[in-house]
Image (cartoon, rainbow, N blue to C red; front, side, top):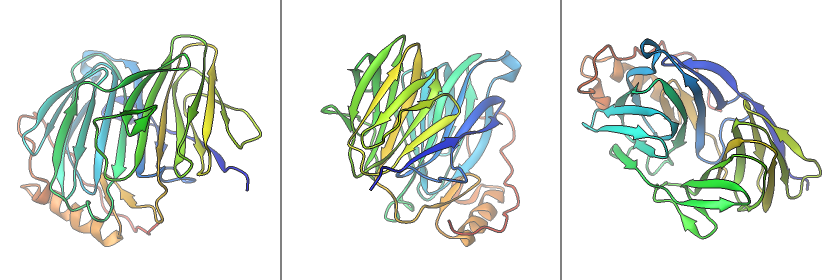
Length: 299
């Protein structure tokens, strides 16, 4: 049986004034393991009045995973957390039953990946929490400078927890690099290009794929390794996880299972006190307004 490969083109948009490319969810593929949302914001240098500013908004059923590459962002949430996220650091906010937060850029220069992790059934109603990780394991991978964001690689393990088996690695090279990375065959994987260009040769696939920013290369289960080659400065994310038997339902800032849940959560956020999501103290400005809930269908 041949290895399943897909090329996924990102949607281009804007979040809080920052240009973004959204690789997940996509019409062709909604998830990679529990990774259910993948935004690449920047790199961008903006005037002070154009800095990213996302007012308080709610989340359920997921963990937000923010990986900062350049710049600084101030995170506030309804638990009372207030944390500056700096380059080389990760913020993990597990919404569970419900949480709200705001994000404000503190610098003109910004470059980050914002990812969502869907929570399994047993954890999606858990109490919300927030964790900050100022240091992550680093490793040299065939000329790439690797940062292990979540999971295990080459005998190292990230301190960032996950409720399902996951992998997240940032790989950056200043010039030519060539690496062969062992993969877990039971995982599905995605390579998300942030900068530069890379040639990808998955074991079991008879072609070499060239990937540029705005493209996510999906590699189905059964792949034992992948070779990555670049000739100039390049940065990419390697994401992986155990396939879900049924993808979660995602709408606006909510991750659930049934369309009816979305209406309940939307009505909760529309309450003056934010309902289950609470209120974010210290943020100056209005909170985001929930849009009308459309007719939704399960994936």
